Figure (spheres, each protein chain N blue to C red):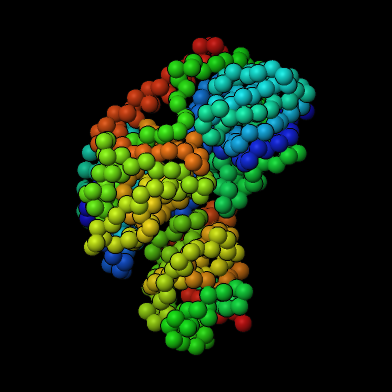
Length: 214
Length: 321
């Protein structure tokens, strides 16, 4: 674990440099530990694939004080109490207008369309982080045989619920938004509701399975 | 009957904002804060309130009509504003009589301006904030920009004394914008030569603000930064702070504002907090250059600015006892 300064009131706690389950597990444990200690000087904790970003209130602490405290508290991550990961089953309408890039992905991967769908549905994915837009889960790890590059020019608008893939990741766009991933389908499930706690259907560590909706 | 205000012309874009939504970064909810937080705080001082919803407006021709006597204030970009035919002072509050019309005719300096009222605009807080998340359409005025005919209700119309922010407390907002920056987490992804041109005095490369700018980010044009041959062009997506300067594969900077919690491009720099309000005033065609400072300088400058903000808050306290 390395702690690095990022801004006047922000630091990064870094647990590794690549996407893998071991690093993810450390990030997840650190995240839930940081939440459990309920410090008023910590304003925001953003966990992602390899790190936790911590934004703090500089009137209540300093970088030196906080980083020393974090080093001490995060030294042992073995006994952190965490919520059980939830498993979400997401029905998806694949292809057609719902998934304009499905045939590209099939062609790119030299597979038939049904094979791409089958492989996308075969995996149980882990939510590595939530972000980009509220509630967007970055899911891994996608079967290498259906990995496809991002679009060179992102689309400016795609419908809410669109399911995309990019390299070894897949994800779901909770809102109508710009999108650079290859869109292979769409779900009717609402992933984020700003009017109702806990707001986001998914959080770091949750599991996701896609089911083909016919 | 509560006081009401009718939007007659929303300008290019007007939104309800406040100082931002915090505490939900782990599920991807960005701050969506007012871009010029200092101007927003000046309004709070003039209107004797704290973290209330105010309007953030872009572009001239904004107009609204008061359907009751209301104390109103304007800060941010220097505008030519009129209450009926009376010109208004910049960064000041004023008494608007029932039936009067506020019009913004021209922007003289800066880009975004802020309008607030004595009495809270009746909008619901969403996830602890009144600010609009425009992309996801929540918060603010039903998640939407204001349009002609929209009516803002105030929960009460407070009678407070009008006031003025002293001219020496109004920051410059015109091009060229010299933005102080801290080194970013991926500074080492770029050649030493291109970093020198990016942020060292005497080598300065000027960038131009492109037309590709919105509340999410500002794309700059100019000489692209050069990645070291071995450096990856993207990073494993990671949490970012507002003001992070990201460099995508084409080498041209994107300044992230308050609408993203995670980024995947190399972060060459972070705009020093002291200069982040200035980002509200970058408009297409403006010139921008960066100046590297140390973390210690960044901290010191921010502490100084906070003193000014505290002073701002105390300016009007005396008038209300």
